[in-house]
Figure (cartoon, rainbow, N blue to C red):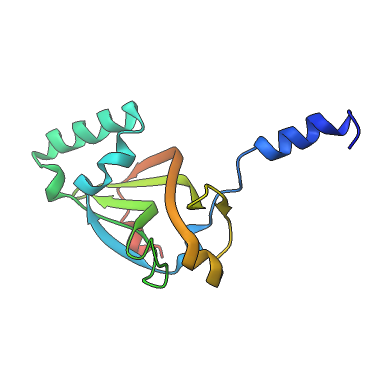
Length: 143
């Protein structure tokens, strides 16, 4: 390898893998807002907005139901786990959360496609780069 190619190779090797497309999982599963605490706590601004919405509605986290993408049982180590995209019903207004999802195997190698090997070896899910919006339109009506 030439010295000129080395910086490019290092950059490509260190760059993050493409996000895993959770839309291809094909399943949804319910969870409470309390179950989303690890995701929501990644953004102080989102946490404040959720706390405010709970206070305004005089509700607790366990009172709010959400939906998230779900890994089917065929994913040996991840079956049943929920991932972005999430939608939470606050009673007349909905919170929709998107995140970049990275799926890795035991050795930290990124898994980018759904294959038999991926379903057997995937062991960890990391959600980053949260984006969200509040809406008064029920997202389940637009699917």
